[in-house]
Image (cartoon, rainbow over all chains, first blue to last red; front, side):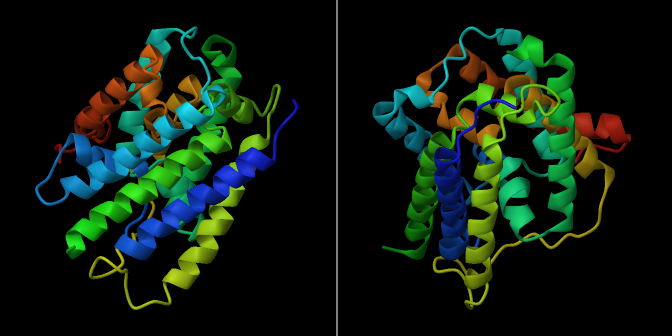
Length: 140
Length: 148
């Protein structure tokens, strides 16, 4: 096991939980990032602006932190671009066929004990672990 | 201000806090994510605390919110109610996990890293969008049904 951190991940996780709860409290919606993002790139009438606002918020939050703590962003430029492309393609296809990603299934669904989200989260964790075990050296 | 504007502003603020949380949590460092998935190697358990913190916080707040008659800026709560298992759920999640393990990015952290303008992040996001457009066709190819 390598050295690990607790405070940053815990504080970040709590903020993610609060942000997701805000979405439910104010708008009655699940904060599922892949689903909301899909609605931005495939706009449907009347449903585009709030989705774009949410995605814009995520991008803006990243920009804010880029100014404050640039070291929080890893330099990934040394990694092969074809792997980033393949990874993105699989994430795009997989999250839509599987109806969710780490936010909608992993955080929102698991905390509601939604059976479909528990199965989805168990599945993407398992194939993620398997993938790193098989090709981890290449990806890094 | 009307209800729809409130809805949009609340979406923006929720996204903003989500983005800040993702960066503080370490999810914008793919090596941390891959380290977490490297269960059989040099395992880095940090991200357990991200998921744990998110799940416990949302779980508690969700219970409280559900005691209210409805959300502030919409007519009703829109919560998924499906409980059945189907193959697309498993196959899709399995493909997502492979992509997650390969790149160390899931959709949120990739979007949060957009303004670094790193070519790898941009390529990831473009290909993720391509994948979302292709998903219906891939689904119909795998399950031999007509595309939605």
